[in-house]
Image (tube, rainbow, N blue to C red):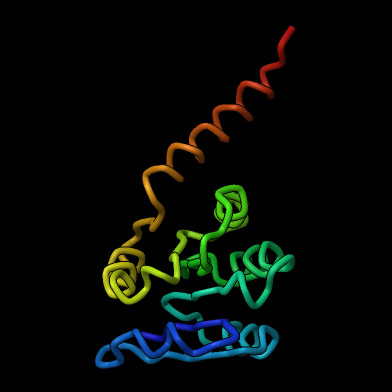
Length: 141
């Protein structure tokens, strides 16, 4: 099972046990895209810190080329709206880097089995966002 990490540092890559997976690390998003287009990895981690304003476009692109491979946003203390925007772009979860050592193994197991990896608080905010859009589409008058 291939796991791809797109980040500017290898911290997360060192935390993933490599006994059952192969970790491919890229600090160049374009090189990562070229690899992903031919390999269809089981999981992709995308760093908010590396891509910043382009992270949404990156996730949208990845979701188009590998819709069956979960994409996980990584970052440190990101604003909820940024995470929600990434989820809407195609991410299946968010890993707070401060919690990576504790949760990365559980995250991998859960996400490759079809689960999302976000906090219950973010689930509530995502539901609220969806409900607001539905209400707005119904019109107010």
